[in-house]
Length: 131
Image (cartoon, rainbow, N blue to C red; front, side, top):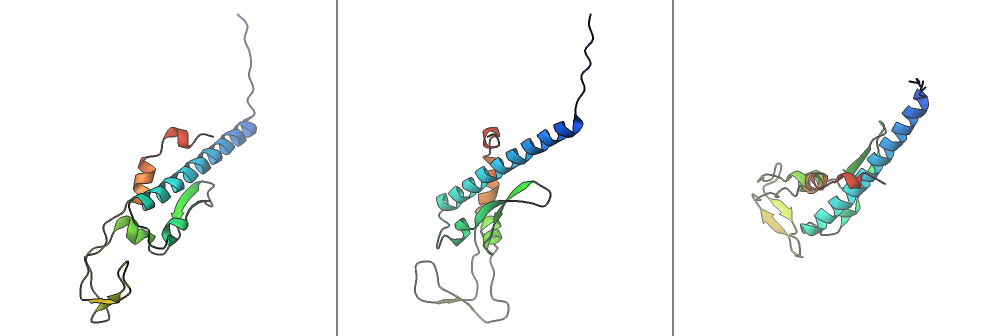
């Protein structure tokens, strides 16, 4: 029986794995950001479209890709808010969606969680990470 000696170029192998990991991470993040945008639209949380338009994928310092929402109120829409009232004033003042007049309220119900990001991540499949 003949013996075969195989030498592995570890640097080349490491580079190959790193490139594959980066590509899979990028593909998954892009697929997730598309699904987040679809979830925002499907759940009817679009007024101006600013939150949906500012969702995107970007590469982090560690080399992994991530999905982020750029609107300042994205976390309130994702996780929801509890019932709340004014902190420094006597009333809250705001224009409800679809109205041109201001409403003054001592207390508001809050926002139900949208879970756009959570649901998008849960719906990812292996094929979303492959080229």
